[in-house]
Length: 278
Image 1 (cartoon, rainbow, N blue to C red):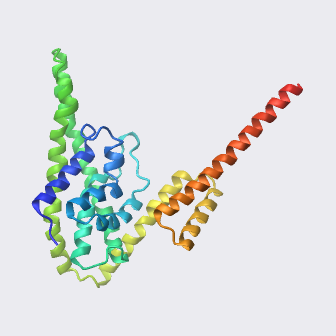
Image 2: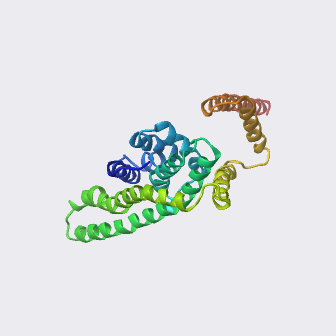
Image 3: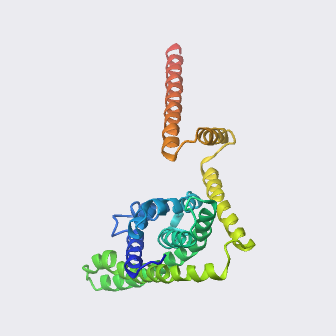
């Protein structure tokens, strides 16, 4: 399977949209929505003509970076590369090998590629930021001359130039030529060799790292792990889908919320009775 220039260009455009806060109405819609692998996989699937397959291949990538945040602008891995480079290349690799996209081998390839291209996104992020400093310098110089018309250009139009050179062109070229490189790669390295099996195994283990990071963020005491283990056991034993597991979790969350509110009301009522006794 190959990726055409049109498909590569469309993926480059999506990368620009996901990275530009102006084009997509802010960071919430861009970085925290369009950049996420599961969301991006829908658009990648529409471009490549296989939405279901791209979503399947994006699942391990999403799990790896499930707890990724950018505190204070610090970026460990920018998801634009994971989503718009990693997903297409992982999809092409699995398809060209004739692998089932839900198989451990395909999922391992996706996890390994997702971790690899995350560093490419970091270069894109900081490269864009550094290029935008040029526009900021121009803006301050024009403001010193009382030219307030520069504000709109610096905030809206000039950063799009940065995204064109840092996001659009690299993504388009890497995706287009990377698809051919995948074919050469698989010819040079047999898929049943021990080192390729090692890559598959490592890729399958990486989602566990993402889950561990998420648990470290949300678990404040060891007792909280009981609910996680219970939910995981329940979902695994009943064979629940992701949507069904979400519905079950929502019910338990509602019950916990109601019990907490009952305790708070009881505590408030008890405090009021003590004040009346005094």
